[in-house]
Image 1 (tube, rainbow, N blue to C red):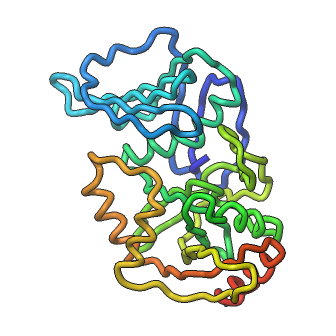
Image 2: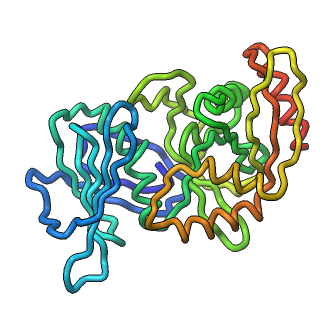
Length: 286
């Protein structure tokens, strides 16, 4: 997951044979929470998947490293120190392994990597086409997962159904596969179906398509996006927005926009026309 070798004592097993490992993380349960006395700053995120989530942080005396706690209501607390790859956790009221698995992959790992300035995160679907990552951006309920799933049915390799990690390498951006699950249906706290055809390595970012829903009978068109509209699309797709990282993230997004081709594609609200959308994108990339 996120090209990370993870060791843990959770009651579930994730086995993904990766061709590329960029990071290592270790998780260990604690019955008693660690003593983090100076967590004075707090962000309460909007209700996510029917639960409240909260990030707390502070800097101990005689230390330049922040201490973090991330709380998922009634499920779990994660604790770590800035720069550390060792994370402790404490179960709360509910210890359902499926829920812990969901929150670990879907929310905690992306948040951790953004805070550690390791990856940028985009809320997009992404598949591999001709050795590059093809990104699908849209607002919630805008068809990202549906189109991603259609590409999977055509034999393309999954990079992400929901959260795509990116990092800058030399003068380009590289896409990091998230986790091997995809969900083309709506259900709270559910990763979706396991996907065998999941990328085992990072890929250069090729192109982003912003999905524009149109009437069932309308034409499928592709038009390049330029100028400030490009930044608006990428900023809309930015997955984790934290006030204390606003300046750094603005600079990173600006560089990404400068080096990413973005197109609007109209997608008719008719599932029977998804094959047409698929062929339009494939021909556009030839």
